[in-house]
Image 1 (cartoon, protein in one colour):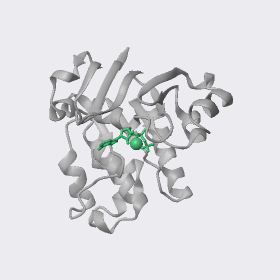
Image 2 (cartoon, protein in one colour):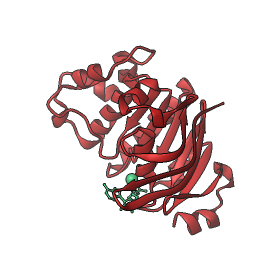
Image 3 (spheres, rainbow, N blue to C red):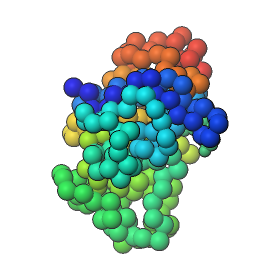
Image 4 (tube, rainbow, N blue to C red):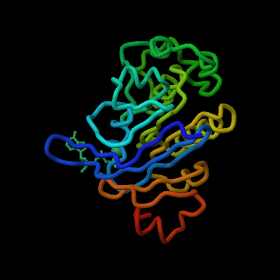
Length: 228
Ligand SMILES: Nc1ncnc2c1ncn2[C@@H]1O[C@H](COP(=O)(O)OP(=O)(O)OP(=O)(O)O)[C@@H](O)[C@H]1O
Ligand SMILES: [Mg+2]
């Protein structure tokens, strides 16, 4: 059953149209990679899903029309976003950052610390004093604390050291295996994405140009459409 259904989605920044026709479905328990070169509309699609930008077309989550909901209501329906740029509250401790995000469900501080032991060790520390990788883990932990039905990760490994990236990929793989949470992944690493994603959707200039099982995304298709 699909949890997120997007069809013919359009969105603009003022007079400049960014999304022309995005089609994207995420089913329960599925990991979907949203791919495309820089500036093709991946983050804009995420902003539309989270109701952070006006959009039109088909946009349904858990059977409800997201266009009728505010961003708060959308989040409360179970959309957990780890935004581009890993935002957390810099002046709050790790523990406080997690607590303010909490909503009822199986994910609590203990479970987040089980996934990212570094966060448990640093729970009293200010978020500003964490390394970039630890801040990214905290951003993921905050999204998990909301107990989402769909977790969206927009460039969660961007700019991090290889060893930290690997820790984050391992955590995402554990989430997939242990929680069965639906996940929408955006990342530059085709290798890591193909290892974990069930399906892929490729955008070009704000339009879905390819969608299918990850295994069907052959090297010539990815070279032509994504440039890798
Ligand atoms: N705040 C904004 N105001 C105006 N135009 C914007 C804004 N944000 C993005 N755009 C434009 O919208 C288009 C899609 O951008 P978007 O950020 O969605 O791409 P992306 O696929 O996420 O790229 P990247 O891989 O670089 O993160 C681009 O042409 C971009 O220049
Ligand atoms: Mg982006």
